[in-house]
Image (cartoon, rainbow, N blue to C red; front, side, top):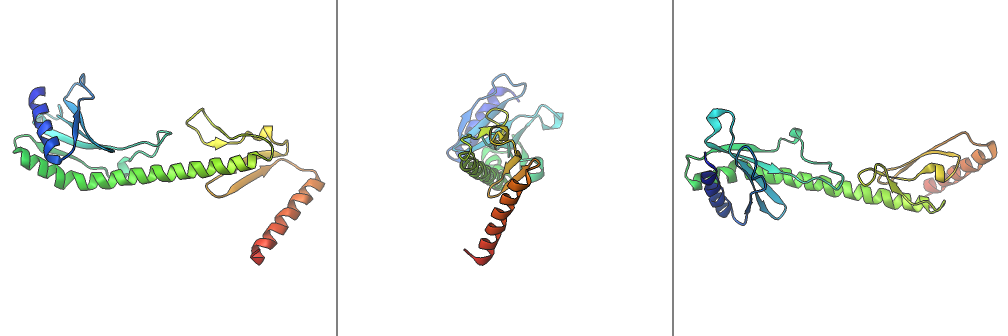
Length: 203
């Protein structure tokens, strides 16, 4: 299929699907390939060059968002939809195929990806808040591991020579200590004992 024929079909599909704009983001691609965009929805349409039997078809797939650390994209295990539709069909039939065979599963997968991103952001925000609260004790600010893409952490060697590692999750803190003087260990155990007693008594 030549590129002009492909673009004509895609333009009509975009109009009939309703509200989508055509973006020719890959003008130098070996095969015709465009994105239809509407808000956060991105549908990718291409003309396969392999196998030969599919060269007269449109290949329809979805683009899914990443979180700010480029994770939580939909994986193959989530069964994201991908269909192929013959261009020999009338435009109305092509659009109905996309609406029936592709759109319901695409929107389901898109919602799943966005929910994962929201959940990851909430976890990240909670982690940062808890580390900030703990770091204030030693006047230490949280930092991200590996620049801007890693987890929030506190540099424990700037806090106390007794702390080996401090891990913070969404709601809990895991604290690992080096060997402690008996007196200090006793004070920590008393604090833990009193906290457990208060929790058990409902205070």
